[in-house]
Length: 196
Image (cartoon, rainbow, N blue to C red; front, side, top):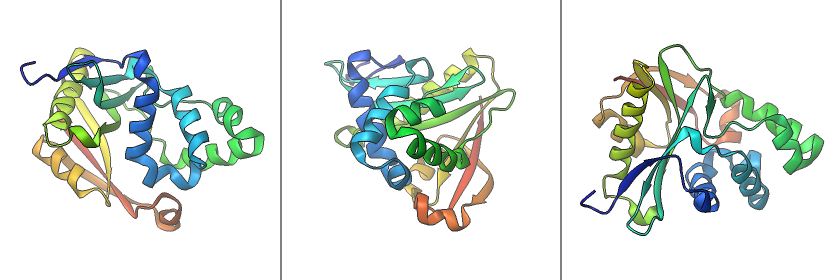
């Protein structure tokens, strides 16, 4: 692309630690209490990231600027098993963390590509990368012959919600977290969807 940003499927394997770091930076507020300490969170994230369910924005030097993950019936960007949790956190630590995180799990529905996270490096913000990644996700949904893209946005991220609305995503429903707001750091999530 003329702006030096290239959108590619997956992410370069040599960028796995960077990808994990950007994921953690984006979702630490939501997952930090459950996945701490940070070094173990990073170990888990690096272990479970699946590039087959990612679209990346790369800079001129091949450096990762941002990434959008998605989930289908075939898998997801972050789709670890309980065995991954216990390998990193031990049997008890992995078990309770897995049970708590299961609350955030969203089921795939026919005809829908489900977003599984989107994040942009701090140094690359304001360059339209989020918009390019969302466009690429919609193209991926079409490629897979799916009719809609769905995502959830938390109430503490109005900037992301504004981006989604500009890109044609419409709110469908809102889910309250109740007492789990003290664990995850947000009170509600709005489900949004866009036809493709």
